[in-house]
Length: 494
Image (cartoon, rainbow, N blue to C red; front, side, top):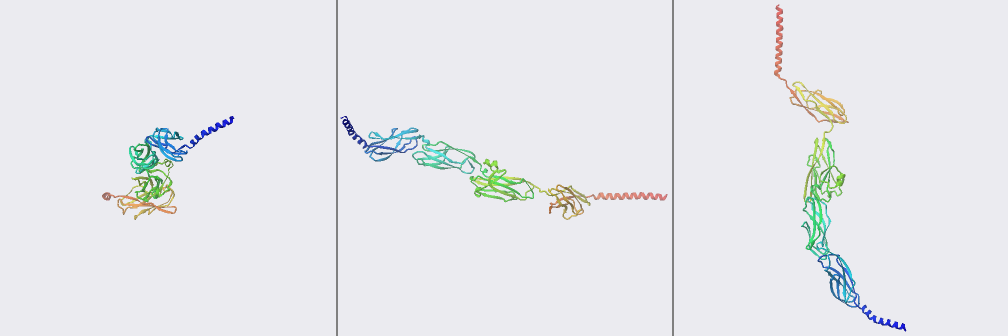
């Protein structure tokens, strides 16, 4: 009896709840999904949030309203069963900084599952950004400063009138930027100062500006771009030798040098010059050369300064017939660097020595009385590092000497020996000159020295003085004879 009563109660409850379950199963059911929204927005923006709403129920969802936890809302009307729609809700009620907002839909006294979005809201002045991609730290005067920048519009709508300023002056006009557009910018500056330049770049538009971005670079004089080093030079050479000077021309590969020329106006320099044009273009892999002193330009590479090994072109000049003593060779360096024309002059100094040889030296001044022979005394010096053989001093020209040549023979290194000649002066006038040279042999090779010239001074005797002496002598003789005859006569008379 009790079991029948229990079964009856259960059947009554099932029959009562079945219609309700049927109604619930046949009602509207909205599902909400967030499609997109910005992670970053700016004060005053209408922030778009795209959503999809799907009615997965079996009945119409009436009077659907898309809402937010900040009381933003948008009426969508009815959504039929099995229909999916995509809508955009614009948010206007939010705070500066980080925001967390729930998105949901209400309909027929019910609401969909809530979805949460997070985004940041900033000051509008930060909605445009400026970033330095690449910029040189050093340029040469006369060239253009080129920097690669990047401007970005962070807003969800387009902006116009964007530009880049440096300390209030427009250096680049950007114009319009699409939403979230990133634009590469090549900044080119011709106006700058030699030395340190500090830029304060600002990207701005009608609603604000980005924070200042510092950009610094150094400008060095154009005449420091090309460096000329001395790589090889003999500290001293002999007069009979050619002087060789090796110079290394070095320049940065990215300096933009053109019309590069190195020449010498000094007489006897061969070749007169080298035209290099564009230093790197003519030799893309310059040699690595050990060098000595820096002659022109400046060295910005500390490693090169310490090691004295540089990359460049080595040029060799030959100086023929250099003068004895300190020899100065002048060089001229010319090139172009952007709008700058560089002309520099520098010099290389060396010592030119007389070569060691046999030397003939006049010992003293030659003075002879009229009618007498002149005695010419010469000294022969062997400055060679070796022994000389068959050393002979010979007169040069048509005049008589005694001996006709002065033979010395062997002379060891450092020997210093005299050579004497008698020169009759019958055919000479006061101030006439005679010349002598030395002939010698070293290791079967014959040599001779340049002639040296000796001036003969002839002192004339006074004729009146000689006649007086003759007359006085005759008078004395006559007087002596007269006295002798007088005494002899007296003896005879006695």
